[in-house]
Image (cartoon, rainbow, N blue to C red; front, side):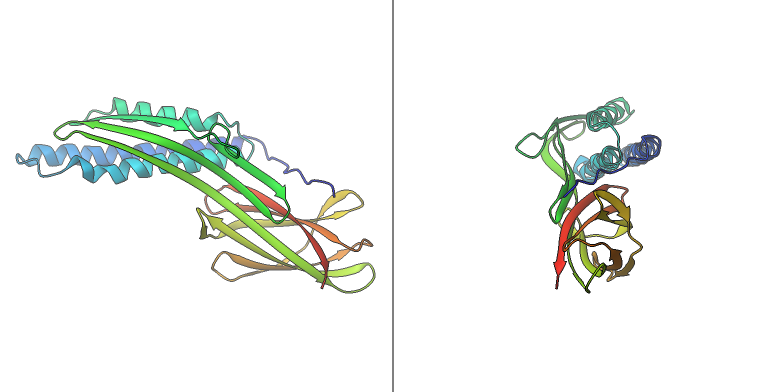
Length: 251
C-alpha cells in the first residue's frame, strides 16, 4: 500500500492563522489584566484576587497551543510552538499591571512527542496531531502565587470501512470519528482518497454528519483489486489537520 502524503497548501494560511490566534490570546490577557487594575484602584480592600485571573492565563496558553498546532499540521515549522509561547510569555511580562506574571514552559518529550509535537498520520485506522507542554506560572503582586500545569491539544481521527459489490465497481462505506482532547468534535472539512494503480485519487463521497463527531461516508470506487485502500484527510473546526488510512475489505 502506497502512503498518501498530505499536500501542504504552503505556510501562508497557517501563518495568518497563528498570528490571528495569538493576537486574540494577547488581547484577552491585556483586557483581563486591565479590568484587574481598575478593580484594584476602585476597591481599597483589594477584594479582587489574583487567582481569579489564572483561568484567563490558562486560556491564553491554550489558545497559543491551538494556533501553533494548526500552523504545524498545515505545513508550518515545529519551532513555531516554542516561538509562539515565548512571544506570549514576553507579552505577559511586559504588561503594565498591579501583578507581575512570569510564564515558563517546557516542551514534552517521550516516545511519541518530540519538542512538544506528535504527528502520526497514515497509520491503519488512526491519525493524530498533538502538542503537549508543561507550564510554570509565577504571579507576584498583592497576592503571590505559584502554579504548575500541563496542557495537551490533540485532534484524533479514527476511520474504518468495508465495501459491497462485485467486479470493478465497489460501493465503499466508511465510519470516520473525530475527537478533540478525547471528546467528540466536528470537522470543518473531510476529503477522501482511494488508491488506484499506485496513485491516490479523490473520491466523490456522500457524507452523513451525525452531529456528534461521527460521520458515515459512502462513495463508489472503480478498481480491480480485492481490497480498497482509503485515506480520510480531516481539518477540524480549530483548523488542525490530521489524517488516517484504512483498508476496506468486502462485507
